[in-house]
Image 1 (cartoon, rainbow, N blue to C red):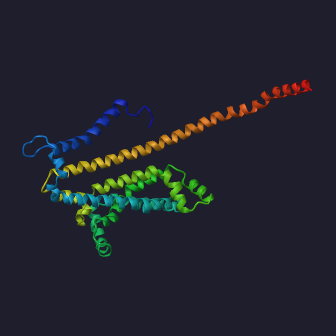
Image 2 (tube, rainbow, N blue to C red):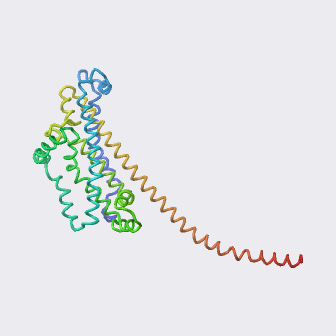
Image 3 (cartoon, one colour):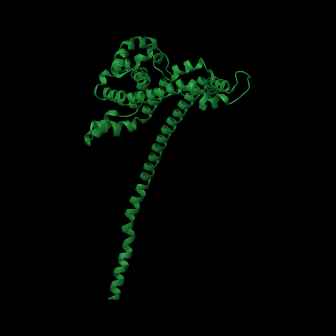
Length: 308
């Protein structure tokens, strides 16, 4: 985009304020709702303190159980993305580039299929999974692995497009590295930002998905909040804010990780430039040393002759 059609500083600030307000207004409204006493309308922190009150333990138990299941699902789903999806994308780009378009179409296909249709197709499969592996909530990770596939694929593929995959791989193989070493010690450090983005998106999708878990009768954070809302309408709002806060912290961690990597790369580039600029001066100094030493040697020879 040329500088003539780029938005000005004031326009960028206006867009930022409008987009930020669209996100902040519902969050501030939800936060004020959690601080308001439903009977009197006064502000109070009783609802937040009630999360750790033993008297509310029975009411909030489904939410704590669902939160534990959701966190376990997030870990398993991220593991599927990192262990199964990432090597597959690398393999297609490296060994089967002709299949890249077909693989991209298959990877992006789940984003165009409604969740209710996915559930109808997955129901017979989960009937067999229930018989073989049980009906634990962690089994939803197989369905969530399909749901997060389009987002994870785009994040990882963007990082792959930014590096010279074939040159890095052939260089590592020519030095005797195994394929596992190539992936773990060469490619993964270069794909760190894309893998972090894919992991963060996977966690966000797992913490926000409701339809598949509800229709497959699995207890996760979202389904538990619907159950508890019938008894305590404020507690689900508090857990919603906490879940959003967790995702926000993950975003900050991703930003710091990416910023630290860029700062490290800039520092290494400055060090290389400084070393390159100092190299000619040191070579010239090295060439001048014999010239400076010559008179000293002649004077020492003359002194020896005089002494004799």
